[in-house]
Length: 127
Image 1 (cartoon, rainbow, N blue to C red):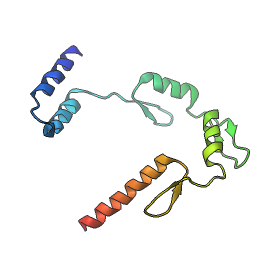
Image 2: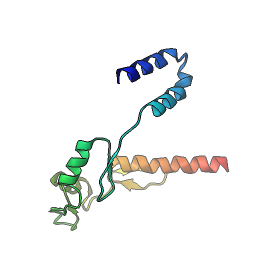
Image 3: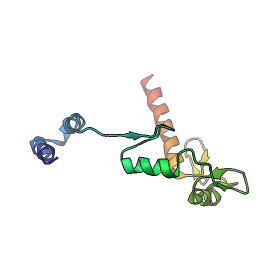
Image 4: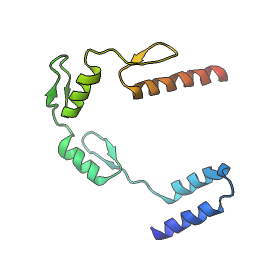
């Protein structure tokens, strides 16, 4: 590992400008291997073996134990049920899209949605 760290340091010092960062990305992808651990039952992948072990022990193919009394959805984790009750169950979205007036219950869903608008704009510009 020390040898790779030295190579990376020397390579970084050689780069004359920030425009050549793609060379650094090529260096990293060609010199480092990312190991992924995959669950044999549900095919989820993890970067750490202990995360996969935790998944198999606590999550994989386990029944949902925490049902919502209002709508019937059920969750594996109590915290997920609490989040559902606080932000989702029988509630309107609080994150509006300025382009199409859709609303979302979670900000990350709005952000993902906004990316579809930018793809549509790029597609129409290219046409």
